[in-house]
Image 1 (cartoon, rainbow, N blue to C red):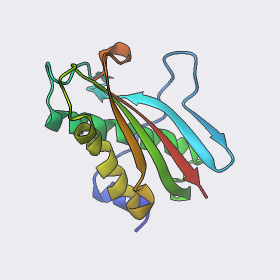
Image 2: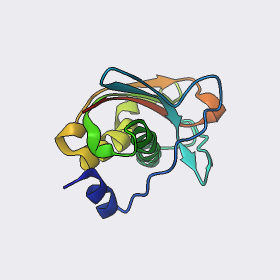
Image 3: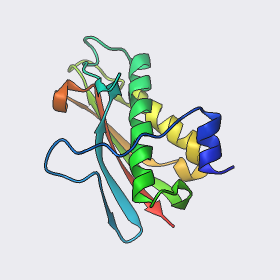
Image 4: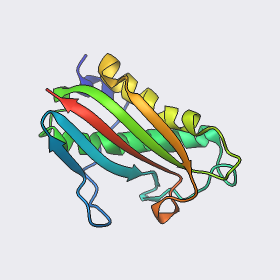
Length: 152
């Protein structure tokens, strides 16, 4: 099954590349690797502002991380020249989770993105990962995720 068949089956429409909010580009390719800049969680078109351990829980956080993965795939599609079937492997995901000092489920929040990437890309979507709790993320967003992929 192609990536696009899987996206259709999951009823996912990829968004266009987001315009950077500061002095950076959405992605950089070197050799066969493409590095996607961090994407923040959005809800209803606005930053999904919340802090884990204070005003958002793990289950809702998984939804936030999943929404970030959808945005990342939109950017990755642009980096692939419009063809996600060129993705040879999702290599690494790094997740920053806006958390209080006593919140310890950053890895579970990040599963929302990791699980979706696995669903869409199959074995090619299984990746290395880091998930960190941080005191704050730009615009108060609850999650920010960056991604590295290898292209064919």
